[in-house]
Length: 194
Image 1 (cartoon, rainbow, N blue to C red):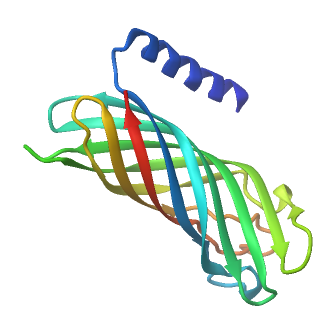
Image 2: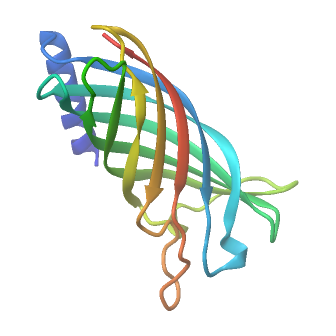
């Protein structure tokens, strides 16, 4: 994974140095949940707030179509009521999004796949210390992201509204098919494109 991150960072740095393609950054908040459809004790369906920060890279194909990829650090949290505990997950995420911009519009629409690499998984019961348990979770999260964002002129600020739905289980299977759980994340971010 370090090699992958190094390669992505090197690619972004090289393109930024030559100023050939738009590079930017983003900061934002998210509301997330990790509901389970078959295990009450792991039903983290109560939404809690988290945050995200990352780099964005845009590759325009035409005036209306293009691609955007990102490297995002994402902290997300949710809660279950059975034991009264919080689930805190930290991912390094890489979405690859196809973009469509209607003619003369100030917004773009996008959708595409996203892969997340778990950095840390923590349980926190009320009144107790947080317990780090990376071994309880699948190390890779895969899903689909889509949303809408405002367009800056050539450079400047933009606002992004995004929904992400995980397609893979968050918890590792320990019996039968395991706990059926998926990440659901709604985020609002402020971005700046150079």
